[in-house]
Structures are given as C-alpha cells and as structure tokens.
Length: 155
Image (cartoon, rainbow, N blue to C red):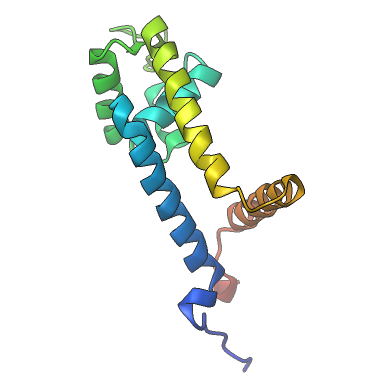
C-alpha cells in the first residue's frame, strides 16, 4: 500500500493561500464598490453584460458563480435601479436576454475603474511577466481540476 499524503501546515497549502487571496480580493472589491451602491455579484453581472450583451439569467449565474435564484435577485435589483433591461416574455425558449441601459453602462464604467484599481493594488509587487505567469498558472490549475473531476484516490 502506498504512502498517504496529508495537506500539512495550512499556511503552506496552496489552496489555503488561494482562499486567503480570494477573500482579501472580495473584501477589497466590496469596499471599492460600496460608494457605487453595488455588490460584487451585481458588479460581476454588469461586467459580463458589458462584454457579452444579451446573456440569460442562467448564463449570468454561471459566469458570476452564484445560484440562479441569487442571480434573479441581482437582476431584479439592477433592473429596479434602471441599470439593465429584460423583456417580460422571451422571444423564443425560456431565456430572457438581458442588456445594460445607458445608466448601466455608466455605472459599469465607474465600477470597472474601481475594481481595476483593486486588482492593480493586489498585483503591485509582481512584474508584468510575473502577472502573466500567475494568470497562466492559475488557469492551468483550474483546467486540471475541471478536466478531471474524479478525486485522485478514486481512480
């Protein structure tokens, strides 16, 4: 029987440090978005719509890492504020394509500037090359986990 590997000290575990980074990033984004009266999921929704207009609620939920139910609340709140529009009935199928209003585009621009400032602060100690490597390394980590969702010890 093979040697069993344990995680070891949490402060040396990559997953733990990733979670710390994600938590710190989320907290800094919350602070940056608060003056704009936006939450991180609301901002993420606006950003996705700014880049890919017409996404459905389900697509937005997947893209912002929230449940469909949570996304419905996000969309309702943004729609009530006049930041996006959705038809009351779908043109075809069940999906309701969502689009930013002019006010939504203005709010997105301000929020995107605020979030980019947070990201720049987070990356300030990394060179441009180190930032590219970090993005590439993290993308490879995601791919490795997405490519093979079967736990290593059950193969």
